[in-house]
Length: 96
Length: 96
Image 1 (spheres, rainbow over the protein chains, first blue to last red):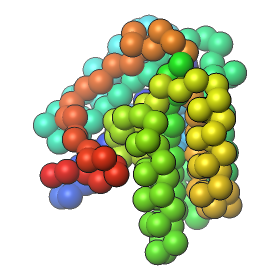
Image 2: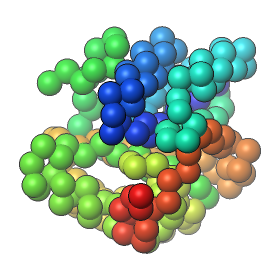
Image 3: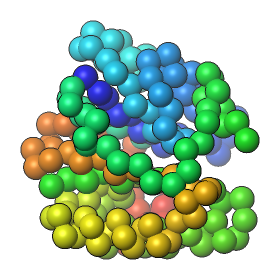
Image 4: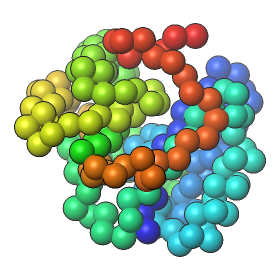
């Protein structure tokens, strides 16, 4: 199934920036970065649970926000894109 | 239906920052800001078309990215949240 993962990480301090990098690094193992803080991952139930567990071990639950949207298997028709398509490298850094 | 709207706006210059504010301002008319660049809007087909039209008139399609995810009517079970829930004021500015 397609799982959309969105996050807001508080990057006011160095620890926050580190969390942000770690989250992106985990997410790219499972899917495609489509925007700066948005990943589309195709996961089975076990992978989803594993990724959730990993991400929850990284975020600061008092400062950061993490959301999962379960789009099912027929997700192609559920997504529409407009505008630029930035290209991200493997670790999720924007290539300019 | 629930429409999830995510966007990346290039805010390197003042014009970009202005576009970002304008987009947020439009989206709050239709829904709830759940993360910095993520809105959940409950829209009928006409409203969705209208909002899309408005947002497309704001973004710079060469620099900004805008995505719509159509989550249908039974969206409550399709969303899971972890961590902090920031509170945003009406125009979408984060309240700290």
